[in-house]
Amino acid sequence: MPWKSMIVNSLNEAFAAAGAAAWGGLPFSELAADMTAESVQKAEELCPTPKTVLVAAFPYYAGEREGNLSLYARGLDYHTVVTGRLNTICNFLSEKYENSRFLPGADNSPLPERQAAWRCGVGLRGKNGLVIVPPYGSYVFLGTILTDAELDLPEHTPAPDCIGCGKCLSACPGGALGERGVEVSRCLSELTQKKGALTAEEASLLKAHPLIWGCDRCQQVCPYNSAPALSPLPEFREGLVDSLAPADLEGLTNRTFRAKYGDRSFAWRGPAPLRRNLEL
Ligand code: SF4
Ligand code: SF4
Image: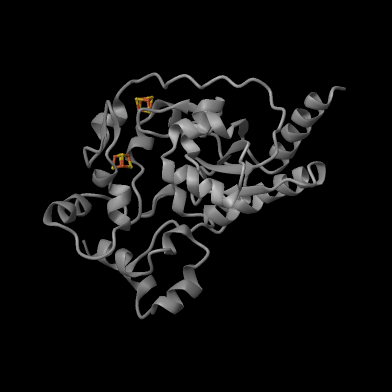
């Protein structure tokens, strides 16, 4: 079997074993077209002479469950889970390309993960700015691997756009979505995570919002999410924290809060924004 087919077959197996629903790869130079000069510089600081970016999608949907936390935040912290799973791919590739670096990232690297996924055809481009990977819908976490190895990957085709029904635009409580994309400052997911005082307008938006962390509205109304497949990953299916009540946070200092919830992605801002949102 030619070397190129061997590598692609091996990567197919390795990504499937790591729990990825889909993966793709593209030259760093192509992705750089979607990056600011500052992001390119940061990527080059991590990996001088970057050549290839791999991107993968990991499903997290755990079924219909009551709760006041966004669905993405109920399982273990996706940064840790996705990085750990990508590390298995990095180890596999490091054995084959001994002199190269392989750097995993999950929502914490300078690489634009969504653009990488769209460009590689990993998932459809949703009007809500998300990557849609049927049958898991947009309930996926993305992770990337940046490397200075010139991997011989197959031709990639950019994913098509979603059907463009517009339901996410009309359902967005913050008016954050428009034909030109997402206005992050109006997104309630961002607002719930904001530190410090809120403006009167922000506070009234959160008062009318059912979640104290994140916002799932544009995902819930999306036809691709009408019957999403369950995640096969136990980190996102078991031991979930669906809700927080004031009593759960009572008396916790920053340190004891981290001891209790430090393995969750909603913990990164400490207990203060959660308490404020609960009060609202
Ligand atoms: S997460 Fe909520 S506020 Fe943000 S774009 Fe989607 S619907 Fe709008
Ligand atoms: S709700 Fe409609 S327009 Fe929005 S992402 Fe889903 S399919 Fe696309």
